[in-house]
Length: 438
Ligand code: HEC
Ligand code: HEC
Image (cartoon, rainbow, N blue to C red):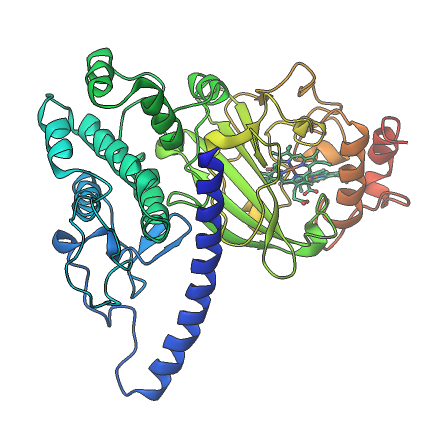
């Protein structure tokens, strides 16, 4: 319940931050024009990570933490712990005696009696157990959330979104499974935190990057790469797909961007295809990953697996383990994603830029019982259109793609064969294709 409230607040803060970024961006570009300072990305001083505190986190964008000057706060376990420590320090600080209200403080100090966290309690919890580094970081997160939960409303506002970011990013570095804590460790925690509160706290911290869904595990065990959360580092933006090639685009999301992730050692390839509206807000975003060696492929869509709702907007970040996937999507991606590889590629567009699209073995989808990649309708070499690739077994939806391909892109955009009145060289084969696609 309070988690919902927290998320909502987090979201408001995010929207606010987003406009701040735009606003500050405009202001700073005006300032740059009117001063004689040389402009350039390295103009500002670099961040002193040794002195950084949580309060230096001023903005977040696409999963990056930025300071007030929009410099990235590069994270490591050490930096994360330092950010945590600074937060604990602030949460255990006694009320200020001074009546002066300083803007430099994250919030106005008006605690009457005691701080949200007792210093002695924190000290006891942190000194009574032989923690691994990961366990210590998690314990600090638990303490921080416990403190934030009882902080005053305006304090909460300053703490919670920053903590959510720190915690969320910390999960990239931890090897812990929050669902399955080490027995001694959780017993120890129970000495200090009521089991029900501990369960709730752990639940609220479970924005877990590293806990794989069953589907992700199946994919991984079939050598299918699991991509980074989108658009975190690893993903590469290959450019926009010209709108005339958006065969499956929706009218309300006319622009498509092509993103790829190449797994280390070329072990596999992922595509993400954000389809955006005219103001740049992502409406649809499918992800497909294919193993180079096994030809197996996995699918995700920008639908929240819990709520079923589309995750849309500008600057969104998609966490792979929170998305609907091949095991539970209502839409059957394989109605169109079929053929030798899992992808539907228009060559000579950004979709065609990765060259390792074909796996060593013909592709098979990892999905539901209705998901399939049946044998080709026209094997490679069996007809004019199969001169370069097989023609997959058509479904009604795939027929739509074939027709558009013949009219617009195949065998080339300069000399398309044409579906209704095909050029002589392709006429026979296209009439054969029409036996499945009337
Ligand atoms: C109606 C046919 C159709 C269905 C169903 C479909 N797609 Fe696609 N998809 C396409 C086409 C066509 C393209 C190529 C770009 C274009 O023409 O818009 C594409 C491109 C993509 C791409 C970019 C990589 C590539 O293959 O070109 C991804 C990722 C993707 N789709 C994911 C999905 C996911 C995930 C699903 C299921 C939730 C899905 N698609 C269902 C037709 C479809
Ligand atoms: C000169 C070689 C060549 C010929 C001939 C050719 N294609 Fe292609 N076609 C390609 C390549 C390359 C791709 C990208 C395949 C990939 O990597 O997934 C492609 C992709 C496609 C796709 C996927 C989406 C698209 O439209 O880009 C369809 C459908 C398709 N071809 C249909 C046809 C049909 C129908 C014909 C006959 C009229 C044809 N092709 C003839 C080279 C060819």
